[in-house]
Amino acid sequence: MTDPNDSAERPTPQGMPPGGGDEAYRRQLEEIQKVDFALVELNLYLDTHPTDLQALRQFNQLAQRRQQLCYAFEMTYGPLMHFGHSFSRFPWQWPDTPWPWQV
Amino acid sequence: MWIYEKKLQYPVRVSKCDPMMAKFLREQYGGADGELSAALRYFNQRYSIPDKVIGLLTDIGTEELAHLEMIATMIFKLTKDADVEQLKASGLGAHYAAHDRALQYKDASGVPWTAAYIQAKGDPLADLYEDIAAEEKARATYQWLIDLTDDVDLQDGLKFLREREIVHSMRFREAVEIIKADREQKKIF
Image (tube, rainbow over all chains, first blue to last red; front, top):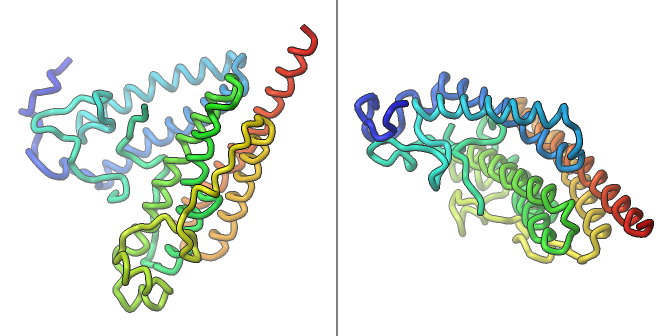
């Protein structure tokens, strides 16, 4: 595992990450959005169908897939979440654009 | 505790600057059956609802916040390139005078959001029927909004939101059945 503080691989020190908001960024984000959509659907479904084992298996499988996709996205574009749910390189990447409405 | 995610639930695209449509979209931003009302209604009802339904209210309320951000993004994108003349022509002259292009929790007619929109009776079935009605009203509003624009990119986002209201309504109907079944079981034992 790479050191999340290692800034050597980070091409631009400040502002928008490389390619932030461009076509590749949107494509990679959309892959996460697709999995997340299924997860939200399964989550709400399980809230009222807690004994559906098939749905639960699918939920856990996709939750794992989501972790992988988010990790790969964050290595390129920076943290998706705050408060310690994502890592940051130096300098602190959370304020970097684009914000969701700027994409 | 809530955690923010730096992404929209579903991509929001618009194909043109359209401040008048932005004005209409405020119905789902700061309107009685809008996304702000929905999120706050569900979060607030959690404290007086049976345990079996708290998870559902938490999850749907959280999704409503994501929808609020999508509506805000639509309004932002539809107005950011509008000049003063366009804002005036679309009926946003008064808004510009007080707020420039800043967003406001107001409905399509400019009425400010009020806590009076939030219903909580403390009776689980009354509250869930309220929630079902709110989802159905929001679904209808999304349909009217889709009818009001010919922007297919904007329609795509609005159709996603319309479908979510249908799913939420279904889940709330199931929650009603869960509470009824729970009451029956308590009578038997």
